[in-house]
Length: 220
Image 1: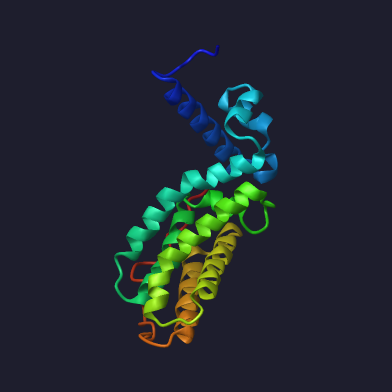
Image 2: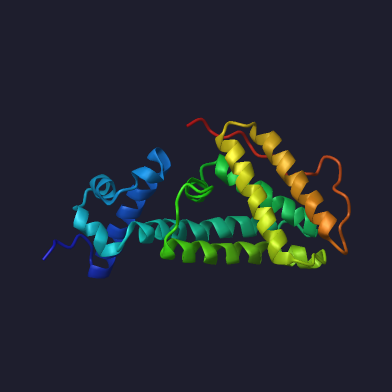
């Protein structure tokens, strides 16, 4: 029987699973999704390769677990920022801006590494991504409803697509402040064009959702 390195078997398994996820995340962010092999994960975690299969039946399950592990903190940070703004368009601007700030600060990199067609999702990852999209939609739906947007799901997907493209621009080295300014202004203008009520024009100097624009990404 393997040596238990925690007070209980459950805690032991939780600690090993966390080690594997930490190793997988490091490989994903440093070397990209193609390098995310079970052997590499096991080596970095200091465990035998069969140990990975005890916790993740497939690479698809491992990728899904990485997304699930990061989602709660991401949702909490975005939700907290949205709650600082009352006007619907300001909330949508904040939704865009805070995600770009998170990416620039190193907090939004798992999703960015897996997005943009970098990984072909299997059933498990596809289910996790679908559930994630539903929770993202829940964040922006009240603002879209307040503006009287007719096709809320479609508009929410377009807002999310704008964020994804802005992150790709940041990854490509574009100036963070300029990317944020353009993305926020675009989302505000596009959603305002779809609104049937309550969409006042963006105020000059406040096109970034009520706070200064994205800080410059740290050198990596």
